[in-house]
Image (cartoon, rainbow, N blue to C red; front, side, top):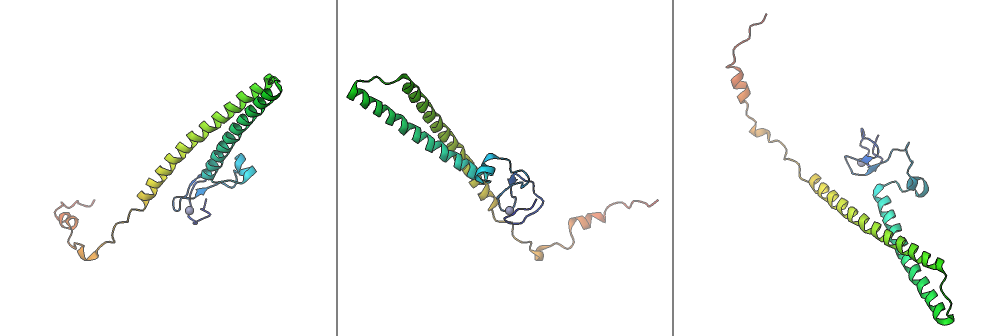
Length: 158
Ligand SMILES: [Zn+2]
């Protein structure tokens, strides 16, 4: 397929463009959920989106946990009513969700950093200056190859 950004042809889909580095999506295979629902096609943006969701759910679950704990503690202090057992289950659930999402975010961020560092190294490698243009004044007219071929025995034609 052709790169929609720079136009370089003869490339396989679901890979990075060899010329400009943009991610090439096969238009016939828009099957990813994020593609269909949110229209996020770039895998790096998908990772970023997932990381954001991880962090937001971790924070929201944490806040909800502390809010509920504070609320039921206050109710207990005020009225002496015992906290219903289901609330403790909700505490556990919220705590687990928060911890899991935070872990997921941390691991994801680490991988993303590694990936970005690798990409940076790759970009620097590609940015190396190309070799200088050939200096035609230095071309040896009577090269070694030409001189030695004279010394070879002639092969008789049959
Ligand atoms: Zn390109």
